[in-house]
Length: 136
Length: 63
Image (tube, rainbow over all chains, first blue to last red; front, side, top):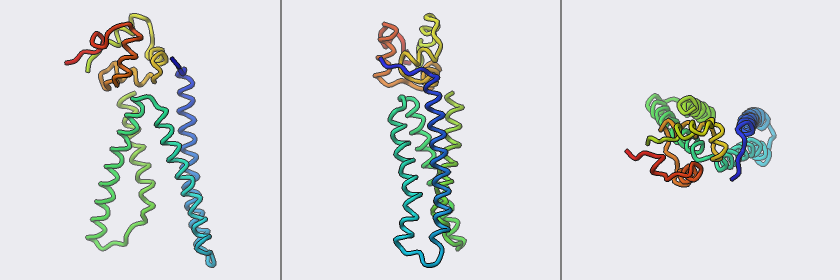
């Protein structure tokens, strides 16, 4: 039977949080900076696509990393992650539909879909935090 | 689902962390099973039963 000491597991969790935080910050910086850069006059469509590739690549690495982390977790940790994601997904869907309905009825301009990223991250973080306290 | 995991662990003088290491799960997982907040999968229940050299139904109480 393979056993991993709890101290090592804690370090692994810390490393995971740090890497995810770095990827999140990297994504946000590359998104904001990239968008400003390609907004300048004379940037070709290919240049704009290249600019978009940086945050997209970071986001994809983040998703793949998260996926493989979930695969490595024990069954209860995986249950908590999947439950948090499911609840966060439902809450975000509700927020987006309510916001869309209000915007539509009020005749407001449509909102940048990129806003979904911080909303999802925030809602997921809140729910995951609640789960950690509930099942500590 | 209730169980005798806490008593069995205490009899052996193991902490939740130690039991987690022996079962290859986190301390949080052991705590959730002991408090009845989470029911383990069948493979994990068998692993627990093998570790304590008992039958599953002698550890977990089906109510």
